[in-house]
Picture 1 (tube, rainbow, N blue to C red):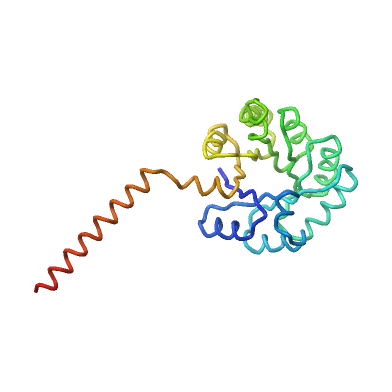
Picture 2: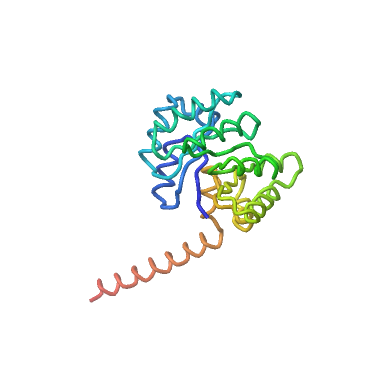
Length: 223
């Protein structure tokens, strides 16, 4: 499974890249707006940090404008992926750009039907949103499971990118469901490292090691 960071923060991206676990980045208008940078400049800076796919989202409701934006986005960085919503206009734009060789991420997917439409037009990624479905008392992860099964049934090559992951259990469940990618907020990615037994075990090992070194140093001093 690949790990993408769902952020617009250059600091977070640099940190995840240094950890050695970063495979790509997903952005959206809300995340970009938090950074206070020109959109193009931000994406180019991200591309200087990671060579993995960078999802860049369109900001229109009309297919023609999405296509125009997408054509521009892919000139910003060779690893730019154009995000369009799972609306009729978004699917139309995905179809047009896909025929031009532009890689597409169909986002805001909340049903297997929408995921099926994304695969039909050859989307590179499909992004089912887990957490937002959970918020309205639906089983968000079931959409990931259903999408994975449908794609396997028909041999669709669209990759399943589990999105709106709110906690580490979401990441585990997405992996168990067979999602190709999990896009994760930085806070959740940090939590993947954490377990109280790891912390206490490491503290004990290091305390014992320091105790041994102190004893050896005292023996040297006596000699």
